[in-house]
Length: 96
Figure 1 (cartoon, rainbow, N blue to C red):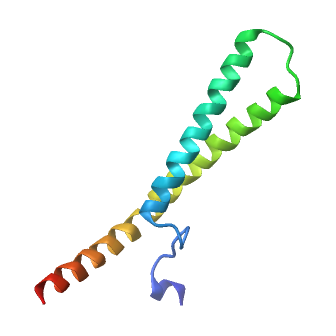
Figure 2 (cartoon, rainbow, N blue to C red):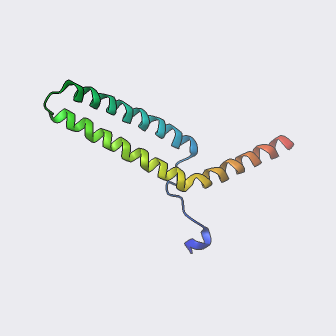
Figure 3 (cartoon, rainbow, N blue to C red):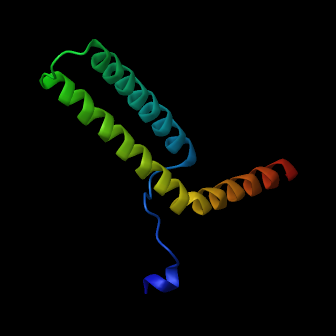
């Protein structure tokens, strides 16, 4: 039955705008964690628990960015179809 419906979306509630918003936020998050980690490594001190938390946050940011890119690759055609439908409705509305 699922084959008759077509492929399913990976993230059904994520729109292209939601993707962009999350991608920007996670990119900033990952960049800041990278800067903090480089500064802490540059000081040359012994690693304390905060350094490990920064490293974990950096890894989390990278993993989530990779996941978002996977979602974009998988759901991109759904977003294109939604935009085409929206453009069609706008065009029809202007024709009235």
